[in-house]
Amino acid sequence: MIIKVYVVANLKGGVGKTTTTVNVAYTFSEMGGRVLVIDLDPQCNCTRFFAKVNGYSKTVRDVLENPKGINSAVYRTKYQDIDIVKGSVKITEQKTPWRLKEALGYLKKDYDVCLIDTRPVFDMLTMNALYAADVFLTPVKFDNFCRDNLTMVEDAYHEILENNPDLEWKIFANMVSNTKAQKLSSEDLIAKHDYPFMQSCISRTAIVDNALSLYKPVAKHRVMSNVAQDFVDLVEELLED
Image (cartoon, rainbow, N blue to C red; front, top):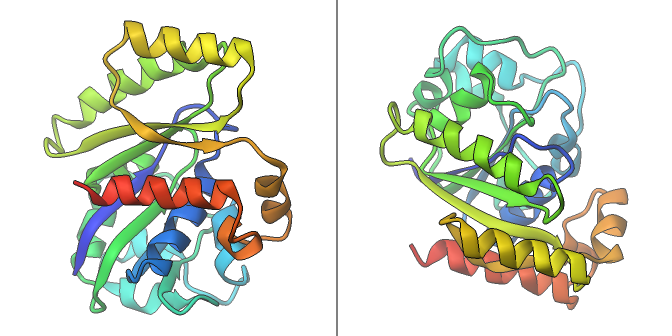
């Protein structure tokens, strides 16, 4: 049984989807939660933070081909309270968006949350995640493309609601700095649009880049850093609902 499924998704690359998935998963586990991570991105970057990528493991590709076999594709990670369904570079396009939701119903282990990492396109593969989700979590970077991107994501969200009417959309600002241009962009966007922005945001800092290069969650790399606390704040806000 999984209490809540979070899908980290956006139509724009470079906004920190995998970084979000890794750090939110780790922070949940540090707060005492049992976490399942599903890597639905063919680049498999999320998998590399938690487990070895090899040709002998079962992956999310196997799960989508045979939802009843999901339990044999769940692996323990190097972190005690985090398990993973590994990504696959050979994952194929899906004909139905319901396979992953079906698979999660067969899980034998109990988890408090499931985090699903996705690629920056709303194809049938990503739809499998969003149709199974309780929360659609979108990291954004305030730049010249943010407004147009969110318009497209909002359109996609309303289409998804037709098949998953209880899906909740949450947006948070990632890679936030205090530059004048970024501040003006964010203030204008929030003032003129009724987007569901969270109060929490994640700071731009070299600590995140350093942690990424080491395939470590930020809190594992620099537990006392401000950005580690940013992720704690983000998770606490998610838990308020």
